Length: 125
Image 1 (cartoon, rainbow, N blue to C red):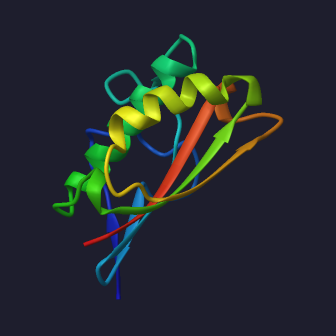
Image 2 (cartoon, rainbow, N blue to C red):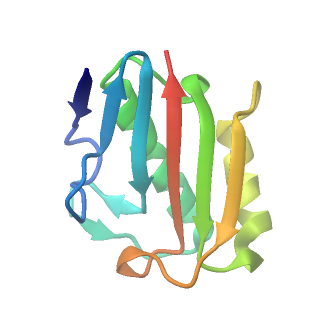
């Protein structure tokens, strides 16, 4: 049985999908770009600023099911520019200090709304 997860502390989806879906003890979070939930707009700024907001939004989605960063087992990251990889990693390390999840990180041609980064996660209770 699946449960659709929603919080107004994360941005509304920009397409026909859910913020996350919980199946048993596993949450599949849709990709987050740096949209401010209060305005519904992509924030301006570099990949550092956008990465922080992506991860904050992810934390808020996880919170709905009483989970947090430590519950994340897999992260998929999509960068508009691979030249932002080192800067992105500096921010990422602030959130994932111990028991780091599995991760992939790739460069893509474009992201929704002109974002510099998109992050999706899978978390387990």
